[in-house]
Amino acid sequence: MLYDSLSWDAELRREFGPLEMTYGTARGGILLGGALKVSMLKGQNVFGLYPTKTLQNQPEVKRANECDSHVCFFMDSANVWFYGVKDCDLYVYDAEIDELDLLGPLERELDELLQQWERTKM
Image (cartoon, rainbow, N blue to C red; front, side, top):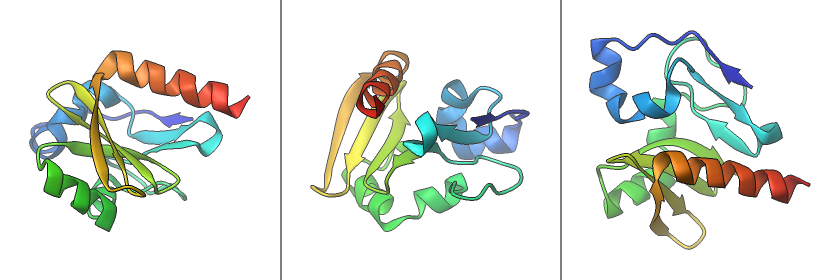
């Protein structure tokens, strides 16, 4: 379930510009029955979803940003895997092993990630 009705303005672009291509008009949401949680960029808080600023202040995300401060994190799974964007590429930080990995081009890798979680769910 994605929550729609987001309008990008100068302030939102300044703060979270790298996420505009990922979010489009969505404000955030829950994917695959809660397996993936897309942080809320703006608007009313939703139970179980981090506001994006709060996600980015999580200790795990701060550790990930020590590896690369330009990755803009927006999504998590089980508070173990944190996903972010940099230069139109998707990254994942695995908090259990303290490792940041480049997955590849955002659109392709996000689609692959959703397919993998869907297969796992079955």
